[in-house]
Length: 451
Ligand code: FES
Ligand SMILES: [Fe+2]
Image (cartoon, rainbow, N blue to C red; front, side, top):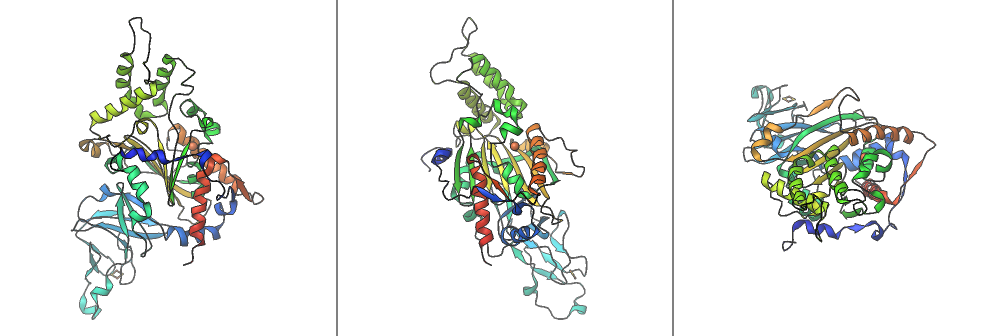
């Protein structure tokens, strides 16, 4: 691994024709999207057992920083100790259970406002209000209940299960090494960080972002840069997680003239806004191949795709991002990563979009909350000024998602409507939707576990 560019390992992914469909169930029962009983099993065997992203490490940068988070109605505190270490605690005072913290803050200790018991950032019980009224108490036995917390890729992960295996083991070497060269830990939310309740099961969101098949029906304008019919999607499955990607290129690159292909690259920012910053360098590279008669002619091995890759590499390098660990393909192509149970991300050199969904706290399996964040790599001094504020959408339909996301937003509720029809008992997956089949297989494995 060390002797090659880190991104090279991605070439071990498999084309659809090489995948073994024999083990996969391509028929999925629909009650898993609507049944309260099914959701109760998910709560116990998935949400209370897996590592989940609860924030970014730089949100709690300083000793004494803390915040609360909720996982399926359970409340936790994450705090950075004086030793710099992040720890997670159940948000219950050890006296009579009062929720200790709300929101976020910075303080040298955590004080319960009910009867003034106080805890260190390491969870230890420091003092109680009016000890004369309490009597003897074993402080060592009354620290906050700790839950595993760790960081990876710049995210804070929490696992409600005190016996969880370590995060690095859960994510696995392929995920950590495959994503490391992108420097996601140095990326900042820019432009969009939004959370909104949706009228669909949380898995409808995961399914929708696990396949490119719906581009033909839902995102027709993406067909100009992604050709799903070419069967060029590659898959890698790693533990409970997975990655898929398809090359990003101007449609019919072989059939179109060079000028048309260059025009195609210029049209990309309509769908991929960050390409805008690469265009000046791209144009300069193209201009070098224009003859005295103004005609474009590329030598062997040069294409608009290779020039886009070169322009991206150079533009990002000038910005200060070390792209030496990324392949040329990673300069142009987005990889779609799924981390079980609820994290989806498209990532390309210098930028990423993350989509997560969680069951709605009201317990209705027909509802969920999605959280969409656009990340961009920026030089350190620009990260704070450009950081997007979290927007909690209260009025459905009021947030201006970019076109492709709006199309998904509208589509997901339509699917849930159909899934709610009791006579429709199972859905059928196309081969293109193999990642959905894989996701449900992993989910079934968790649900079959005995506790
Ligand atoms: S419940 Fe926290 S001090 Fe009493
Ligand atoms: Fe979509």
